[in-house]
Length: 304
Ligand code: G1P
Image 1 (cartoon, rainbow, N blue to C red):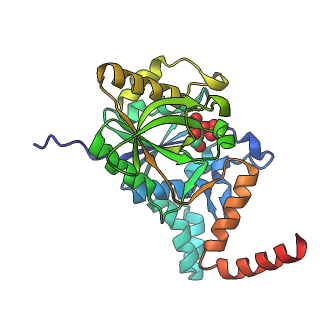
Image 2 (cartoon, rainbow, N blue to C red; image 1 turned 90 degrees about the vertical axis):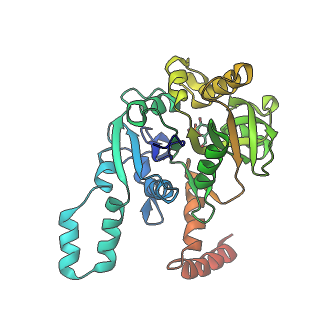
Image 3 (cartoon, rainbow, N blue to C red; image 1 turned 180 degrees about the horizontal axis):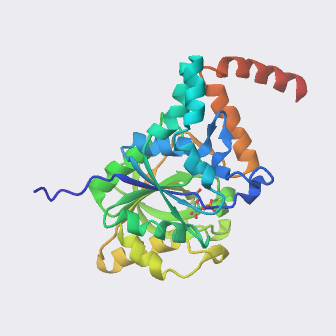
């Protein structure tokens, strides 16, 4: 029997947020279902997990999230209507999301923060490293970040987070990492973490973007992590404890490394970012892009 490290196969997608920044659109529709061009935001995220080889996906949901389950399930009525019309293209689009991955659901109940959402995944994940993907960050499939993070976790062990350099005036919107170089130019050792610091207190301009590959010891830590910023149980605080435990005693679960991402990332977290993400992605689409770009250039020239 091989004792090699188990291949990472599970992805956790927290999707229990209320989406209040998008009201009234999110009154009866989960924010994860809002379309980015013509696909719900959450489908991009599941596709990303699958292309990194993670085909077991756990969504941590809450009340009003039934449309998520329906989206990744079969829709026989629609499928047979399209089949009888001979509309193979649209039929394929309907079937794509239900054939993507093995998707499981767990409810968060009390929304007590990202750390708490991740803790809800413990019974499903068990004792293996796993990935966490946050739905507000879309990563361009041409710049495969998660795959690289899985490789880095296999090389260095412990946990791996995704980092991106941001302007100092933006750092208060993110978890922030103090880092030291490693022998790999795109990998840093994380020496400290703080959730959404004021610019003046930030240890660097390295922001955590919503991708993590975590050692299962994180669950033990999350069980005792006190509420932090915003009175929520913060994943960043639990990771900071992993960093400290590793530094002082080489404890199990550490170290924490960061993959520095320089690729294309689309933020859909608030209305302005969401609009920018749609315009950028629409411009790049082969089917819609050429016409849309021509219109956009004319619109900008005439209206601005
Ligand atoms: C969460 C994390 C934060 C991270 C961010 C990335 O914050 O707590 O550390 O930088 O995601 O998108 P949220 O944006 O959910 O408030």
